[in-house]
Length: 369
Image 1: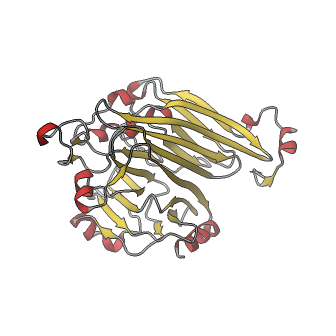
Image 2: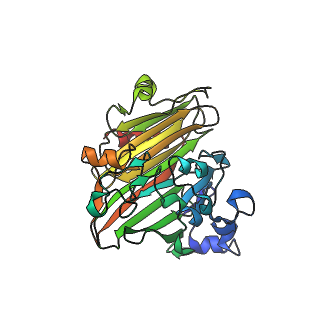
Image 3: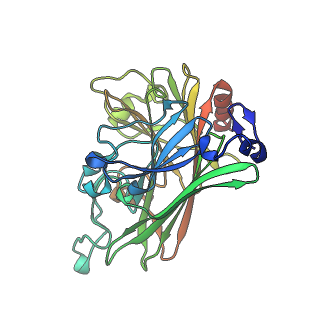
């Protein structure tokens, strides 16, 4: 039974008090109208619990801005929510439309650093764009791909009022990959939790590389000098010298600095008895956090992105099936996943607001199992 404004209400009792449930919870269809954002569709979820968030069909069904009782949870970059038509796939061009937001999808056949994949060759062994897109940009195409068959609705299931949306994101090229993501995003009214179920299918007739990374971007005021990060696992592994220098403070926030170097840490996560891993950023002063859960069998890697620079002040929590060094590095390390013709892989994760010390203590206890 949903909790509305501090009390439990059945469907019968709630509907006596409102003419339309949209008075307290629902999904609104909106669109940006100017600048490089013009034309980007938005599905705005209002859960009635204090959690509001945007789902972006025009950006791979990513999660955009999110707030809890008016307090922002996600980091927003200076680019804004750039329309997919402005995608710059070469090199680091992905960053020109990286608007931040609560969740950005990296994949589906490439994620991580740009580079070349020497294993992608054409007739006679010569490098070719297809199949395999030998020259690979940062983080792949998924976030810049507009979704198809988008449906959204709010329905009663007993006394629970469910808000959901789903759609398909296809990555395809003639002579090459034909991979599709089916995403369903769901929230229960009166609850402060987002559930995501993704199914990635290879509809083509050849084996294709498959890389997927969920780029969750948490910002101020959740991130501050009073924040700490907990992860279900052991000590992290620094990616490079910059991360090595910050290894002693990997789990705490700090003030914005003028020249803070990007730091990435790889965590060996430990699943609980249900096969789930957890991570959370919690602000002790606010008594507020955001917890992330994912299924470890499919998402066997977890990266932490820490940047305390002025303007780029963000903590990234990144469950993935790969690391962020790029496809060639994954192939060389023996970690590169493939999808065989007709194969489907399902990914399950959730994001949950942790309101108060008790909620954080319970979550932290799960991480310690």
